[in-house]
Amino acid sequence: MGLTIGVDIGGTKIAAGVVDEDGAILETHTVPTPPTAQGIVEAICSAVAGAGSGHEIEAVGIGAAGYVDDKRATVLFAPNIDWRHEPLKDKVEHRVGLPVVVENDANAAAWGEYRFGAGRGHDDVICITLGTGLGGGVIIGNKLRRGRFGVAAEFGHIRVVPDGLLCGCGSQGCWEQYASGRALVRYARQRANATPENAGILLGLGDGTPDGIEGKHISAAARQGDPVAIDSFRELARWAGAGLADLASLFDPSAFIVGGGVSDEGELVLDPIRKSFRRWLIGAQWRPHAQVLAAQLGNKAGLVGAADLARQG
Image 1: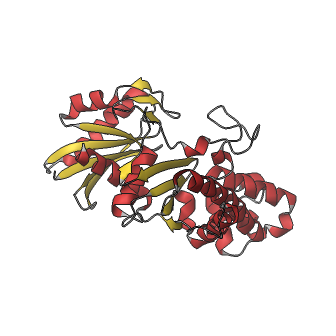
Image 2 (image 1 turned 180 degrees about the vertical axis):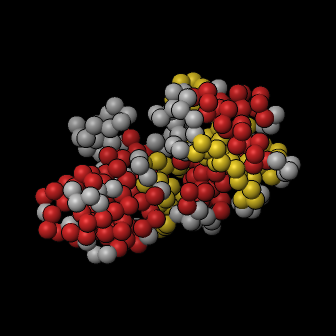
Image 3 (image 1 turned 30 degrees about the horizontal axis):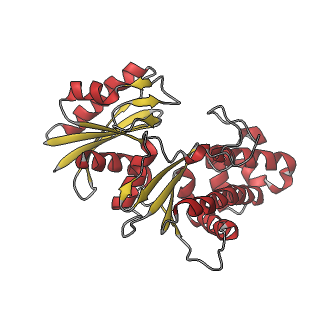
């Protein structure tokens, strides 16, 4: 199969890209993300039409944040869009006249990294995305493992702290409440409030108050040596690495790939994640260790992965 289109549904924009068999993006088209569920369907179709103009497209893959059924056709539940048992495949196919595959966005990103990014050369890979929340994907034996009902690898909602912090999913103590961009901001604000004398750079990048600290401020301050910013990254990494150790007990992959916005800080966050992983890995001194690698495709991973999954049908 030749060219396919991958679609990434973001909070502010929907991006569609024409992708070839080598994972290269040949053309992109973006449209604003509408406020309504039905409007998003129309916007997806508009983005596909814009990207595909002048190309011979054979299929479309859509990465959707939510639970996607085992047939990769229906979005069972989307936390940020009012989709409940939404027949997204049928609706988009009807409008664009092409075969459509719907996949969870974290699964699509994991597949993109496995095929064309940091996972190349590995048969067994676990991906986590440290963004606003925490997503994941599992490739074992060169196959994307989705579970019987299609909703496997929701790692962010593994409960790591009984009766812990309330999560947006309605549960308490979920991993993403301790290892995510949102958690990083919380750590920084708490520490800046407790020891403002150690957060001079960090506070200066915002409005001077702990509540004014945002993720971009923490990254910039950490690069400038701000103690609170660095310590906040270390706390996030401690939780992330401990979680990877648990996933190693479950899946025993040869590599973990860490993506998402938080991973853009490179070794600032990856080195302490590796140290925490080794600290909490059961039998660490007696067993081989999976590599902990930085994702390579950035925010293009989901689009490229969705396109490739559509190619495979």
